[in-house]
Length: 148
Image (cartoon, rainbow, N blue to C red; front, top):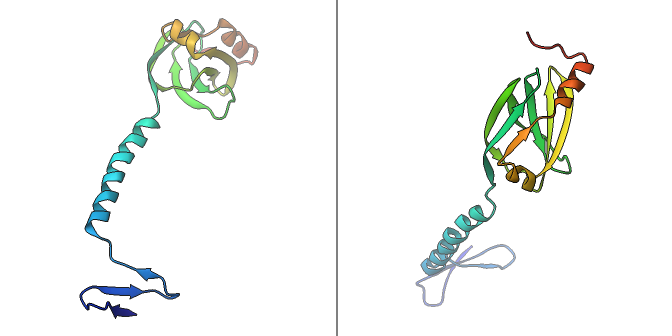
Protein backbone atom coordinates (compact mmCIF):
# COMPACT_ATOMS: atom_id res chain seq x y z
CA UNK A 1 0.00 0.00 0.00
CA UNK A 2 1.38 3.45 -0.92
CA UNK A 3 0.97 6.43 1.40
CA UNK A 4 2.11 9.92 0.75
CA UNK A 5 4.26 11.68 3.29
CA UNK A 6 2.97 14.64 5.19
CA UNK A 7 4.46 17.12 2.73
CA UNK A 8 3.00 15.13 -0.25
CA UNK A 9 6.26 15.25 -2.23
CA UNK A 10 7.95 11.89 -1.47
CA UNK A 11 6.00 8.64 -1.71
CA UNK A 12 6.71 6.12 1.07
CA UNK A 13 5.87 2.43 0.70
CA UNK A 14 5.00 0.20 3.62
CA UNK A 15 5.37 -3.55 3.38
CA UNK A 16 3.33 -6.16 5.17
CA UNK A 17 4.28 -6.12 8.83
CA UNK A 18 4.81 -2.39 8.84
CA UNK A 19 8.48 -2.34 7.71
CA UNK A 20 9.31 0.97 6.16
CA UNK A 21 10.96 0.90 2.77
CA UNK A 22 12.50 4.05 1.39
CA UNK A 23 13.97 4.93 -1.93
CA UNK A 24 17.72 4.53 -2.40
CA UNK A 25 19.38 7.89 -2.32
CA UNK A 26 21.91 8.62 -5.09
CA UNK A 27 24.70 9.24 -2.58
CA UNK A 28 24.12 5.84 -0.92
CA UNK A 29 24.23 4.13 -4.30
CA UNK A 30 27.46 5.92 -5.23
CA UNK A 31 29.17 4.97 -1.95
CA UNK A 32 28.12 1.33 -2.37
CA UNK A 33 29.40 1.28 -5.94
CA UNK A 34 32.76 2.76 -4.88
CA UNK A 35 33.17 0.18 -2.11
CA UNK A 36 32.43 -2.71 -4.49
CA UNK A 37 34.72 -1.26 -7.18
CA UNK A 38 37.57 -1.05 -4.65
CA UNK A 39 37.16 -4.32 -2.75
CA UNK A 40 36.45 -6.68 -5.66
CA UNK A 41 39.78 -6.19 -7.51
CA UNK A 42 41.70 -6.43 -4.22
CA UNK A 43 40.01 -9.72 -3.34
CA UNK A 44 40.95 -11.16 -6.73
CA UNK A 45 44.59 -10.21 -6.19
CA UNK A 46 44.65 -11.67 -2.69
CA UNK A 47 43.24 -15.05 -3.76
CA UNK A 48 44.75 -15.41 -7.22
CA UNK A 49 46.43 -18.81 -7.68
CA UNK A 50 50.16 -18.98 -8.31
CA UNK A 51 51.80 -20.88 -11.16
CA UNK A 52 55.31 -22.16 -11.79
CA UNK A 53 56.40 -21.05 -15.24
CA UNK A 54 58.28 -24.25 -16.20
CA UNK A 55 59.10 -27.60 -14.63
CA UNK A 56 61.48 -29.88 -16.53
CA UNK A 57 61.01 -33.64 -16.10
CA UNK A 58 64.01 -35.78 -17.04
CA UNK A 59 62.79 -39.28 -17.82
CA UNK A 60 65.57 -41.88 -18.16
CA UNK A 61 63.05 -44.70 -18.49
CA UNK A 62 61.89 -46.57 -21.60
CA UNK A 63 58.26 -45.60 -20.91
CA UNK A 64 56.35 -42.41 -21.69
CA UNK A 65 55.05 -41.44 -18.26
CA UNK A 66 51.85 -39.63 -17.39
CA UNK A 67 52.70 -37.26 -14.52
CA UNK A 68 50.17 -36.08 -11.95
CA UNK A 69 50.77 -33.96 -8.86
CA UNK A 70 49.12 -33.52 -5.47
CA UNK A 71 49.88 -31.83 -2.19
CA UNK A 72 51.19 -33.54 0.95
CA UNK A 73 47.68 -34.62 1.95
CA UNK A 74 46.99 -36.10 -1.48
CA UNK A 75 43.71 -34.17 -1.51
CA UNK A 76 43.36 -34.55 -5.28
CA UNK A 77 45.51 -35.29 -8.30
CA UNK A 78 46.08 -32.87 -11.14
CA UNK A 79 47.53 -33.81 -14.53
CA UNK A 80 50.85 -32.10 -15.28
CA UNK A 81 52.22 -33.56 -18.52
CA UNK A 82 53.41 -36.73 -20.23
CA UNK A 83 57.17 -37.12 -19.95
CA UNK A 84 58.58 -38.65 -23.11
CA UNK A 85 60.82 -41.67 -22.67
CA UNK A 86 64.59 -41.25 -22.57
CA UNK A 87 64.39 -37.47 -22.64
CA UNK A 88 63.36 -34.25 -20.94
CA UNK A 89 59.87 -32.79 -21.15
CA UNK A 90 59.05 -29.27 -19.96
CA UNK A 91 55.62 -28.61 -18.46
CA UNK A 92 54.52 -24.98 -18.56
CA UNK A 93 52.33 -23.00 -16.18
CA UNK A 94 52.05 -25.64 -13.48
CA UNK A 95 49.78 -24.77 -10.56
CA UNK A 96 51.84 -24.13 -7.42
CA UNK A 97 50.80 -26.94 -5.08
CA UNK A 98 52.52 -25.45 -2.04
CA UNK A 99 55.29 -26.55 0.29
CA UNK A 100 55.17 -30.28 -0.51
CA UNK A 101 54.71 -31.77 -3.98
CA UNK A 102 53.87 -35.44 -4.60
CA UNK A 103 54.36 -36.59 -8.19
CA UNK A 104 52.76 -39.82 -9.42
CA UNK A 105 53.92 -41.66 -12.55
CA UNK A 106 51.76 -44.02 -14.63
CA UNK A 107 51.80 -45.64 -18.03
CA UNK A 108 49.40 -47.98 -19.76
CA UNK A 109 47.16 -48.07 -16.68
CA UNK A 110 50.00 -49.18 -14.41
CA UNK A 111 51.35 -47.13 -11.51
CA UNK A 112 55.11 -46.71 -11.43
CA UNK A 113 55.41 -44.99 -8.09
CA UNK A 114 55.56 -41.58 -6.50
CA UNK A 115 58.17 -38.99 -5.64
CA UNK A 116 57.72 -36.53 -2.79
CA UNK A 117 59.74 -33.30 -2.92
CA UNK A 118 59.52 -29.95 -1.22
CA UNK A 119 58.96 -26.72 -3.05
CA UNK A 120 62.36 -25.49 -1.86
CA UNK A 121 64.06 -28.62 -3.26
CA UNK A 122 62.39 -28.08 -6.64
CA UNK A 123 63.33 -24.41 -6.66
CA UNK A 124 66.89 -25.28 -5.60
CA UNK A 125 67.13 -27.66 -8.56
CA UNK A 126 65.85 -24.87 -10.82
CA UNK A 127 62.49 -26.61 -11.21
CA UNK A 128 64.07 -29.73 -12.70
CA UNK A 129 63.05 -33.22 -11.54
CA UNK A 130 64.82 -36.39 -12.59
CA UNK A 131 62.33 -39.25 -12.52
CA UNK A 132 63.89 -42.24 -10.72
CA UNK A 133 64.87 -45.24 -12.79
CA UNK A 134 63.03 -47.28 -10.16
CA UNK A 135 59.78 -46.10 -11.77
CA UNK A 136 60.68 -48.02 -14.94
CA UNK A 137 61.73 -51.05 -12.90
CA UNK A 138 58.37 -51.11 -11.11
CA UNK A 139 56.48 -50.76 -14.37
CA UNK A 140 58.48 -53.59 -15.95
CA UNK A 141 57.78 -55.78 -12.89
CA UNK A 142 54.05 -55.09 -13.42
CA UNK A 143 54.40 -56.37 -17.00
CA UNK A 144 53.89 -53.00 -18.64
CA UNK A 145 55.00 -53.66 -22.22
CA UNK A 146 57.97 -51.65 -23.36
CA UNK A 147 57.29 -49.52 -26.42
CA UNK A 148 59.02 -50.46 -29.68
